[in-house]
Image (cartoon, rainbow, N blue to C red; front, side, top):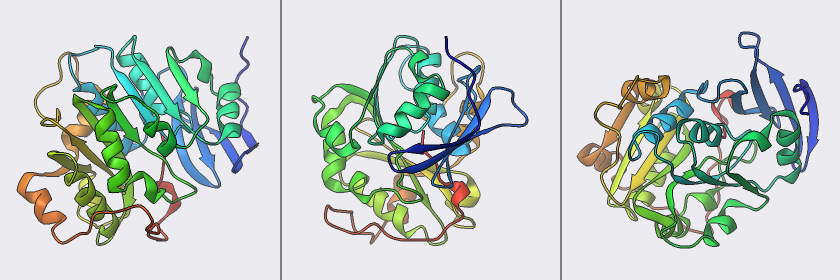
Length: 286
């Protein structure tokens, strides 16, 4: 029988993780890695998404195909597996695979945050680039990249070469979501958008309006797909918090998005990850 989670610091393969209990939600837990908030999960309510950028991704998932229909999802970056838990709860029967290279972190989440209770979730100890490359073509409805080393997104998960692997794996109606942290002139996310726009015929940038305008540092969701993105129109059934966040989010698409990334160079393998010193609380993983 699984015991209750214990707040505290835990050694993991990449350093130290810290588990903090939410003072306002009895079953809410924050996972920090290297001092950076990576995940929030509510063990009794997996549809509760505390981080704003995670609500936006949940809102996209809500509109992916028929309501509550099972999907095949791939997650690059695991942490506490917030989005896989959401998908399992809102789309029963979904098959999901998570690529997370930190074996110690995975073990800690298994022991403390009931990871093994998520149905049909396969967590593989491998880096995301290798994991996606090994997948068969036309095999996923959703590919999510939400991976950070400390406060930095590995650039090899945003390059043209990797994005083409994602496109190979996605089905014609699938969606690719990437969590990018940026601020001020949004120089890095402009290059990420330029990259995905060179691979996928449809792309969109979603974020809190203050982040999208560059007024503050934060998380932005780059969405891309072979077909028009399913982010408009009503959600069947009651409007969940995630769907509401998607409605409220600022967005750029079409000509506005083209102007946003005009002149930005696509990212390629071999480049160094851009460096920045944002407030650490804006970063996160699933």
